[in-house]
Length: 562
Image (cartoon, rainbow, N blue to C red):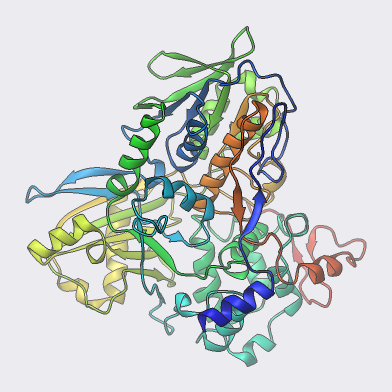
């Protein structure tokens, strides 16, 4: 079935899409298709090898640094934490028995259409098969509920349109007679993603309003769509419907690789950040961990002065701002030389593009859960808990501890939780919710736990697209990278961070006459994008401010929720 699905998908145009081919040449100011909203214009380079400071040592900053360092560009990476990684980072924790375990900031799934991030990871892979030895299939990852049957997306044919047909036929949450009562005209917007049309018509609508407009039964909405929306660390009530449609397109409706996901068999520090840091240092990159960038201002000679919390001033010809959205807002807020030259950057400084808080709780328990439990499970029921990861089933350090003690290492994740609640309280609430779903948890004793709340996830607010900055800015010598940065092609989460990091490096390389790095994505338009665009051209006068679909009964207000 898999070869047939891939063949049909290729005939339907479902294949990796080359956004930007490698290019070079002095005086080039941009690389076609990169994720920039506003071009800074052609400028004379102060030198063939510009000094670059990258603020942020997560996926975005490391991706930019790799591409630049490989071309001999001198790079300084400033990371506020004591090691690289950002939200993919890890830190050591000593358990009561003296065992040291590396604890991540939450499980991350490495989906197979993460082309750009995987290309970066190939630099540190040791086998002939690219990132194969580094990343391993995670297996089935069900969506479960106390109310309804499980959903398992990874067992679908890998490639649209057969994957869409199979979901419709196999899913216990989608019945044909119920689908017949859904609003097909609104569904056309889901299947017909086109960046220009989708954001023009849906960005003023919340994901919650859009899903209600589909008129799907509650079970399908909860098991298929609400889980999906929450997994982007945003609440459906405040997340833009356009961003929801874009992400659904990227992960399912235009994904040539299927919904299977992979993960390293070691902690992120051992598997990724230690090797990647060494790779960068071997190519001349200076890694300044424990260094927080606080502000940017212009040197009288026209370059940059990058100010840090320890009082240092780093000179630079080019700056890549690759921190999380909150840190970027703080840096921009202290940098009037920057915000005065770009209204979108001023908007970021005034209103950071961050999502709601998220919580991660890792428990070391004195026994195991039932053997049939999946390594990763999504939770659809209302409450705090969104996912469960059994680290002792696949991660080397946790597996070793399990082998010695018989205990389990269970991570609980809340993607969007109420603000102001202590991490320990959220951890306890998630564990109680898990015990209701998995009764065997009641009998397990806690040996240790680590609970944390993060506020650095990217936000995709209703109506936020028009003021979202892209990789290129209106300020010469400044580029942006991160999962919060707008992209002109489909991408999300880790892949957007990597793609925008490469895009920022490419903008610098092109401006200084160096060869750029290719950028890849999934097909940029949905399978019914032509029909969607044609339908929206028939929008009658007087319906702006409402969600209108030809033939639809839906007339939802587009007012932004407060």
